[in-house]
Every structure is written in C-alpha cells, then in structure tokens.
Image 1: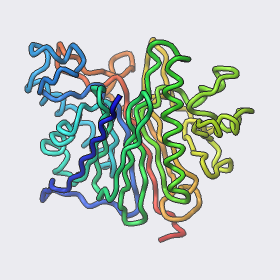
Image 2: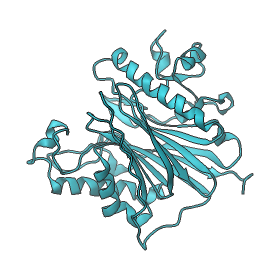
Image 3: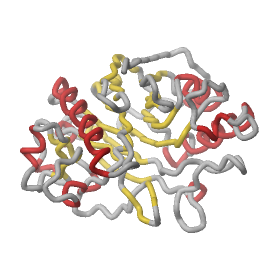
Length: 336
C-alpha cells in the first residue's frame, strides 16, 4: 500500500485574546476524541457518519463546540500542546482553531494522515512547531513527530494511535509492536532531549505481565525478558525514575503510588490505554522536569455510572469514549 504522508503547519491564527504562556509550566494533553469527522462526505468515513440524516454541518459544529468546551475548560489551565487521536483530517483541526482555540493563543498545528485510514493524529500548540515529520508504520497508522520551541528548551513529541485489539490480541499485537519499533528508532535521534510519547496505545502498561512468553509493544523494565524484547523493538517503560536510561521511558501509570483507574472503560473494566511516556532527561534536574500526570475526569464528561459520556449521534450530545490525560512539566529550580 502506498502511504500518503500529509503534514500541515500554520501560524496564521491570531487574536487579541491570546493568553501568555507560563514560562515555568508546560502542559501536554492527549485525547482520543472518537471519530471526529468533518461535514464533507468523502466516502472513507465510518458508515454512521455517511448518513446525512445523522451527520451534517449542524451536528459537526455541535461536536466541535463540545470539544472546545473541554479543551478550553479553565481547570486545564490552557495546555501548551494538545495531541488528538481519531481526527479525520486537517480541516477539523483548522475549524477547532477558528471557532474555539485560536482565541486562547493556539496557532500552530500538524496532522499526519495515512492513506486508507479514515482517522488520523494531530498536534495543536500555543508554541511554535519548528519541525515536524511523519514515521510510517507498516500496516498501521503513521506516527507524527513535532518539535516544539519553548522558553526553556525544545520539546519533542511523538503522537500515535496504535491498532485496537479487535480481532484478537495476538493478531493485532504485531501491528502495535511495529508502532513501538518506529518510535523506538526515531527517538534515538533525540538522546538527552525532552521527549514525550503521547497517544492511545490500545494496551495497558503492564501488558507484558499478562501474556507469558509473548513479546508486547510496551514492556515493563522489571520483566525478566525486558532487554530481549527491547532489542526486538518493544518500547521499554518503567515507573521508577532510577531505572531510566537510553531508550527507557518513564510511564506514570507504573509508579508505585499511582492509583488512577484509567481513561477508557470497556465491558465494565477500566483500561490505561491513553498514556504519555517521558524520556530520562525530564528527570535530570535540568530545564523541564516531570511534575504530574492526571486523567481528566470533569463531571460533565461522565455518565451517571461514572464511565465516559461518548458522543451520541441520535441526541447530538456527549464527548468521547475516552477521557483526556495530561502531563505537567515544571521548570527545574536548578535552571531558573
């Protein structure tokens, strides 16, 4: 299959309502927005979005309004970078900016599309995106890489949306491992830099402990085969900053004191699929440093049973079947 790589970056969105970025805090939010299609019928959309009786310019604008409500919620303190999964194309990002986000200082964006896939990943930033690239994943969705210029240092962010487990874990895991290989290889170009890997990994951080003798895309460093799987392309992760090193990312979900249930609920079970991984340099007391990780659980995002209030095409209400997650970095006191 021929892969189409599409990157768009713009800084043309300006407004007198811009809110200055905080030079001492840097926040990155990642959100699987669940099938954000525009109102133009291309024939590649999921079937329910090809019915003009269900999906129209009006319903599209309502969907954008709801997403804008979340992303601009004052409690989020205007994340510096927003990573989105399951967006159709650049138009939905441009419309989010035009109708909602630009007034709060969001200007730059990048989108990575894959030919044949109805959904893509994108990044929206209040800081300049100075470089961007796309990493092809054999049989999977492309990975977006953006380099953000901040007052402290450049921050490298990888945005991904791994294959779901529909069709079985073993069959789909091969594609998720391809995702991991692409990120692992690309991240080698940024040793000693501030790197974050954001997205919907479609597997839990402890997955390797759940499948004895099977290589998985994410591998906890305490697993006896961690180094072996790492050499074979898995992403190595740890919840202990002392275990970090080249090619080993910190995963907040694996921290001993983490009590977060997750961001996606399926069959009554919460999963930690939406993750943000952090490179060792964010723990070296220089420049940006890791501070907190959280799952955003605003009451209006939840149904009465506490699960995500997903977008409903019949009632034209709701948000997504996932909850957003966010990492906060702070400026090292040693650097100020």
